[in-house]
Image (cartoon, rainbow, N blue to C red; front, side, top):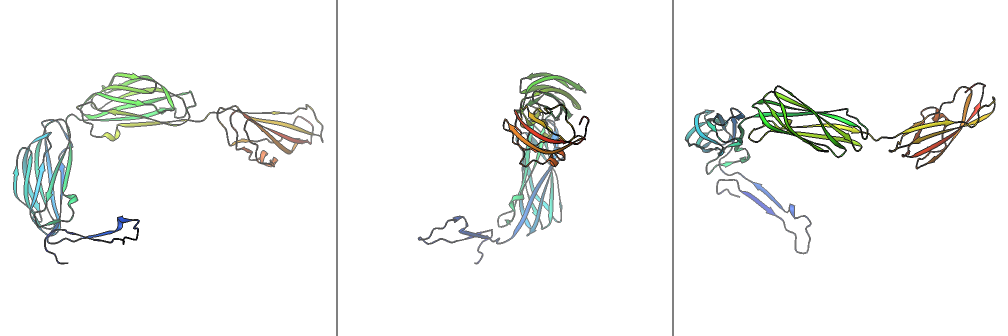
Length: 402
């Protein structure tokens, strides 16, 4: 093929099945190739602000960088910077280039910078602008660069540079949370400690804190609030599952809040709380506004064991039997419970049998005396309200009280 015009034409080829055949995957029936014809360059734009935040009426300096990584030099590249509505009074400050980059023309109004530049291969042009902060809010300011007609930009994805500036009072709020104790049984309580802080630079009046309990906890109770450095809790509302508070947080202060909750289920309970800046105040770092604490509520059960013998006296050479009853009063299962029985001096255990009730399952027969006296018998299935009776036959080898 012969090139007839500059640009980056895309050439496509297709394959089509005959009418009598069924092509089950049409997505791969086209292949494409792109060829750059004429001069080409990879222009890029980046933008930085002198400060990430400023008050209304203050001035921010923006540094715009326009670069060309080639392979061709570019004459009359188009530069643009449009201020968002919340910023105004745009002023052109300076332009400087390296490796031959030059600003050939520029027009700056109250809100728009337009210019043209010559950008040799490997060069960078730096343009400095100044703008005044207007309305409060978080604003995104962008700068763009574009190749002139007849030149192809091989990577237009990097032709836009952006920067975010926060306008208005700034308060970096944060929240931490802990629980004591971290493990509680059903119907027991734990205490959560929330510490709300403000590192400034401005105060945050009417900041809000919200704590919502997970499903396994209930009975939220507000205990206390203690301020440090002028921080105060001004109002709070507590329900069984949620706590909401309003705080006054001057710069470099904190408030410690204590809450109590009761276990109403089992498992691992993740409790989260958040802090939010008041309307009109910008929090420049939201990543520290969420805090969480984990409380583990284990499954509870009540185990017991008894051991009896129907006779009160024996002589050496006789045999006797002991009934060992292991029981689980629940409410939860205790699968994996271990039962051990070690014979006293004067007794030699010879055999052991098992019977079960209430859904418990005896260990797999034959049950070994050696295992019972060593590692112990594993009760793999031991539900609540169940029991197992182990009958141990022993030979008497000596007198006394074995």
